[in-house]
Image (cartoon, rainbow, N blue to C red; front, side):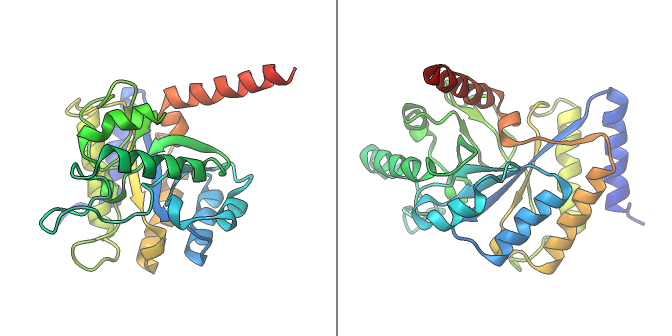
Length: 270
């Protein structure tokens, strides 16, 4: 008989507790654009369980309605999700808004336009989330040039900085079965993915300091997905070994930059 996946997670977390360090997590949700009932449900879930949420917003599809909805919501961090979430890859390539075939000038314009829109959101971070989690690495210097201090994709990060001045903060557990049902992947698969990442971190097989990242897409969640997320957050609320970080806490360089900028603004007002 296979082990209950919740028991498996509890057992892995006990090993973390024995090592004297919490198992850190962070949460990113993609494709936000306009206020919708699923987005309201998402932010309510974050508030109910006090889980920091990094909301990846598509600049070209958003506007003042979402800005107003998120104003003053301290547990939500706004991050830039590409520009228009359009596929510019070739017919035989995987979907990508920023493939190598696009010119640097076009990319610079899209990214800068997106930044101008994102500047209207409270509590934002200069963390870039490329649509479909893809960005050709030859474009990384452009992100630094434009002032981004982090990039978030999917899968275990191989380095702290894929480009000098650009930190990597990835997600690792996708709750949607994109290639089959486009519904919930199932709690066993989701919990196994969490445990696998935790084991690799604990054993030093991958970066131990990168928090285990939960990736969600509120617009396509079915009831099973919402139920699993509620159960996971309830589980973590009663487990002292699980620690949820905001994107700013997971990117200490970014958090420091925000504090420094705030201090400079205060000084300039005195």
